[in-house]
Image (cartoon, rainbow over all chains, first blue to last red; front, side, top):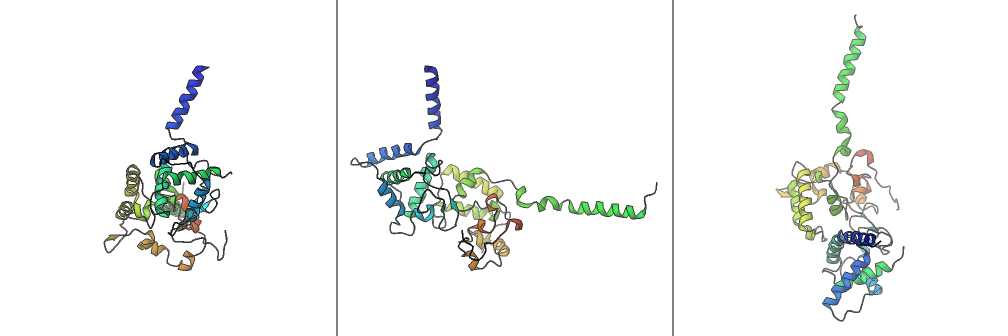
Length: 135
Length: 165
């Protein structure tokens, strides 16, 4: 029995190392990073995440410009019209499972929308909102 | 045994016709015979717009596009160095054989190339501005098989005037 348990644990570790992560894993990583950069960190807020998603931050675009106002629905790129798969994990289980993708798109899209990189607090707030949306 | 002249003539004509048509047949099959682009290209360059076939631009144009991904037509499309090398390898080998340049400067926009303008002489700006088209970058609005690299006439269908989603 013990051997079976060890084998299962081993498999789980391998799966984690291969990058098959869950949204909650990213949330935990953002929390750790936010804690490091601001000791006064008091958790994430879905409401702040929703506001961040819909705001243009004094520039041309918001996240919703391409992802749509409802992240559970298919979006459409504001310039090219390309279909963009839903962003909310409940509607698209592939979202927030690959660290390289998550890092790449936060970098690109925060630069596009806010003109700078997002903080761990902002990423965590946004993810808190996305995770709060049911299917 | 003598074969009647009429039949002999018919045979010569059919063989001749078949020989003349044979080389045309595979070419007529068109884009579907081309190898598909590598998955990494489709993933990295097909998220915001359709993964434009490498044959749409010459190698110098692609090189210039890759050199400016941080500010790619108004958005940040940066990739990490390993991905960039993979994209470069594909685009360099599958690029258009003729350079796409104007006055010696590589063109970055497919829509500005001579071949694109030649192929799209009629679509006026009103077609580009159709709510379903939005932009000439949205190939799939008319080229219904653009996602799989097929831009042939058979899959071409313009959206109707006032066609709603």
